[in-house]
Structures are given as structure tokens and as C-alpha cells.
Image (cartoon, rainbow, N blue to C red):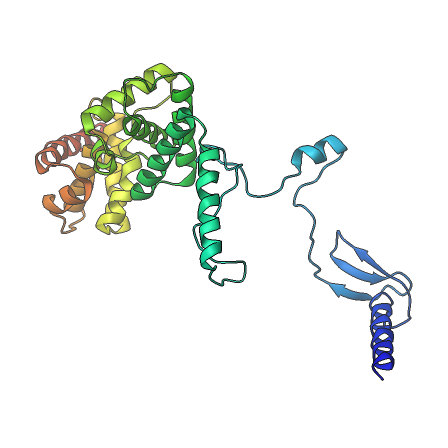
Amino acid sequence: MSTNTTHRETETERAETEEEHHCPECGGNLETNESQAETVCADCGLVVDEGGIDRGPEWRAFDAGEKDEKSRVGAPTTKMMHDDGLSTNIGWQNKDAYGNQLSASQREKMQRLRTWNERFRTRDHKERNLKQALGEIDRMASALGLPENVRETASVIYRQALDKDLLPGRSIEGIATASLHAAARMGNVPRSLDEMSAVSRVDQATFKRAYRYIVRELKLEVQPADPLEYLPRFASDLDLDDETERRARELLETAKRQNVHSGKSPVGLAAAAIYAAGVLTNNALTQSEVSQATDMSEVTIRNRYQELLQAAESGATASAA
């Protein structure tokens, strides 16, 4: 009885398989057109299936060497990990593949494996140094809301400093903070010294010395910070309307044309431009509100405010003439 049943099931599966490989209209052979993602009958041209899933790679290769070069497996490498993300990583969750809790003996075994895996991943003092610094960079970047590309650049800068033996006599945290500050400025998403100091584990004086040191020794091409780069973030924090933000941008552009920004804090100029734009557009912004959002003193805002208005008046007079 069971043998007959099994035989009938096998015949049914074979028949279904044959139907899948033959045209339902004429019984012809089916062909798959991968470029069009369609399954078509070779005899009558009937489109049996369309919108198929392309399970191949997203890249193309024209010879064996190019195929080997582009082929990859696993997660992409990253400079944000001391081993470039190439080593094994054992998760901290004590659960199996089905989400079930491990037994006591299995948990002890996994803990031993984690311990030995961590020892193998950091085999010397240089790797331990790098691991600590990259963790510090990631922590500060998360607190400052910096994008992934800035974190990668900061990691590369720190690695260069480590390779050139610039660390002796200086703290890991100081060089890590300096690397992140340089990367943020190079990525056109700068953060002020006060913002960097607020998330760093070193004081501002130590961080500034480390920053000047690595810029000089690594010959980093860091351009002076543009006050316009701070404007969108401050405007978002203060919930400014489009007109006020546009007016603040115009004030800064006029000041730059007249070289008013030279030698002055870009954060202070951005804060003063926001306050001045608020006054010109009848936006109820106080110096105290702008000071809290930008972390600049009210005295600095008042001083830069007068300079921006004078530059705007001079620019208007020159245009009229």
C-alpha cells in the first residue's frame, strides 16, 4: 500500500517537473532569456514567465582575471576595524540559529571561544592601540552625527599616524580626536572645537596640539573651514524658515567677497549671520537662543553681527554705484 502510494507521488512529481520545462500551449521546450528576465517557448514564442530574479552578480567580467578580481564573498572590508573586518567575529548573543537560548555548557564554550578569538585578533600592542583608537573614533563620530565616509577617512588618518610612529608621547584619545576633526573638515562637514572637545576624552588644548601636529607631519590638505558649511546644521537646530536661512547665506557670501571672514571664527560668523538674518526678516530670534544653538558667546555674536551688516551695506553701496 505504502509502496504504491510512494510510486504515485513520484510519478506526479515527475509530471509536474516535465510541465515546468515544456510550453503549456504547444508542449515545446522553454528557454530562459536572462537579459530580459523572461522564460519563452522556443517553438511558439509564448512568454511563460517574466520578471524573473537575476541571481547573478551585479558586475560584469570579460575575462578570467577580471572575474577573479571582482569576485567577493562576505561583508566588505572597512578601515574602521583594526583587522579591516577580515577576521571572525563571534556575537555576544547566547542564542543558536533558530533564536533558542544555549545551554549552560554551550554558553561556557562560546565564552571561551570569544576570549581566544579576541586574543588572536589583537596579537601585539600596535593592534591593541589601533583597536582602541578606532573604537574611540566611532564613538565620537556617532555622538557628533558624522557620516560613514568621514569615519573611514579618520580611520585612515590614524593608521597613517601609527605607521609613521607619531604616537609616542601622545595620547591615543588625542590623536583619535585630531584625526576625526581633520576628516570632518576634509569631508566638508566640520565640527567646531567646542563640539569636538565636548565628546572627546582629552581637553581642548591637548586636542589642538595633536591636530596641528598630525596635519603638519602627515601633510594633510585641510582647507580653512567655511562658515557656510555650518549654516544648514545651525538653521535646522533653530528651526529657521527658508527665507531667513537664505538671507543668512547671502550675508556670509557678501562678507566672504569683502574678505571679512579672514582671521575670524567660522562658527562665530555663521551664528552672527543667523541672528542678523533673523533681524532683517523680522524673525523673533534672540542672541541667547542663537548662542545656545551654536555654542558661541553673545559678545562674539554681537561683534560679528555689526561686521556683517557693515559688509552688507558696503556691498549694496558698491552695487548701486
